[in-house]
Each structure stands twice: as C-alpha cells, then as structure tokens.
Image (cartoon, rainbow, N blue to C red; front, side, top):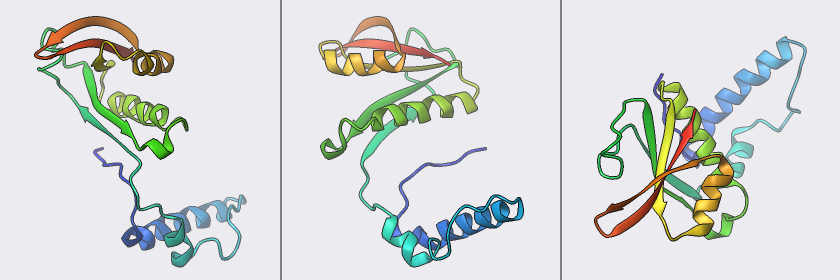
Length: 152
C-alpha cells in the first residue's frame, strides 16, 4: 500500500472529520466511546490544524551518490532531515526517523541508512541515540561524511 504523509491544511478539515466520525461511530458501537459531543465538528477540526510545516525529510530507496559501494535493494535512505528551530528539542526528529524506519519496513527493507558531515558531533549523537550505527566514512565530492545504518 502506497501513501503519502503530509501536514493537513484547512481544506482537509472535512475529510479529517469524516475519518474521525467513522472512528467515533465504530468506538461507540463497540462500547468504547471516545469523544464528547461538540469535539468533532469541521469548525473545531479546522481550528486544530497547524498549517505551518515544521519539518521535512527525503526518503529514497536507493542512493548511488553517497552509498555507491552498497547498492543492495534491502536498504532505504534518508536525507535532508530538518526541523524548524522553534520546534527543536521536542523529539520531532525522533518521530520522523521512526516514521522512516516504519516506511522502510513496510517496503520490505532491512536497513535504513543516512549520512551527515563527519564533523557534526551533535547531529551524529542524535542519530546514534536513535539507534543508528556508524558504518563508515566517505569522501563524496566536497563532503566528508559519516555513514550510518539502522537495522530494521
């Protein structure tokens, strides 16, 4: 199953409401009601939608530029993980990496790989604290990168 994960916008409020109402009805029918009356309205949903994207990452199933010596089809790759500064320190990068791991898993991949400038200790620590293992270092044009791998 292919899908795209993206931030909802106010134009999506009616679709989100449909999904929530379907879930609410199912929960009610199974004896586990969830939301109170008035919580699920298009107006209420539209107010909750943050239209400002807060982060991004690039997910790809091959990386001939940074991993040309490891072209196995069993890996997926992450690049350009970025979070808006005002949202830093809230574990958003961890959530995004978790999403990438799960996305790779659903595609039958055994590894998630990434790279970063070798001289960025805080970024490297972020990846290592998530569970990525240092694989190798590599010079790629002007970049000297540390390559990391996460076993799925």
